[in-house]
Length: 434
Image 1: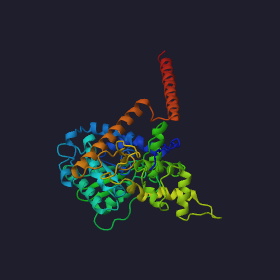
Image 2: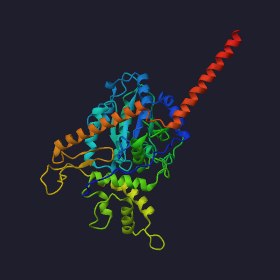
Image 3: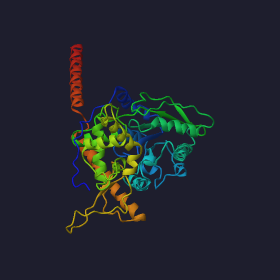
Image 4: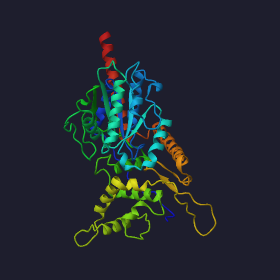
């Protein structure tokens, strides 16, 4: 068992906010004015890190302009059913926000219901749905929910859905699947998809998702945060997003991602971390990235000319392994997880850390619980994690940690230019009136 797990030195988060993201952010208020339902996609593996806080202000303003009140939202208790959505829309314009946690198949099922309840307790104004594009039942349920929301407003001739979210969370793929399920007959693929973030660069034309009632949707470019934050928080946020391929490839050194993966997998299970199944039998846990990659390259027979181990190739393979299955394996259920004492001397058992993905991590001091008590305990832990995330976000906003020094200089320059223009205009008006 590892007795000391040092936090790795992480690279400074890069700024990746190309022009098409900036343009869409400016267009968003106008787009929302003709939108009835906002379908926000997040990644189930990082449900908190993949929140785009820059969209929050625009969505709040949209709802305020439509006279939305919390009581008019879809009733949310456990799994939202299509029938419960049918009541929305009577007595006013449709104004619904649905948060879709995509890639459900990449997270363990034991945390889904506690997370849904935790989100309902902290965000009663949001409808949270888990889905996976390769699970037809999930997409059919979401399609029925949208159709029933439209049916709840019989006086409206059509309903418009705007799909938003961070890059590479699966927006285009989800819309293609919704269209295939909602439209009878053969429906050709309407949107191009890519495994690389930033593929969708413009707002799509309207896509028909249902014929009766009429439901249309727009696909939008993935919008990254203009700046991921300063210090260790921003660095960790950037690495997390890079691990789910949410940041343009090449902006991060893959060995830096491996270092963070080793750290988190060791923290979640210092006795038998998930990566040990990839190494030769009886290999002990390690915090040494170079040693780990050497062993992994040897085990995978990744050799360069001359027999030298290809650690760069092994690093890329390890990151892909985590994306496809390692994240699911590492988030094993904490119930019945053994406590471990520190040695021969008598001492209270030392609680270990467990988690559901990298956004939810807690001390496994309630791992012996089972049944409903286990689910309730996990829900409480998740609520604590959500509260901490909100607290950090508020503190970053207060301190201006979400704005880079380059953006601060640009804003200062723009303010100076505006003052000069106003001064010149005032002088010109004074001459005309003289």
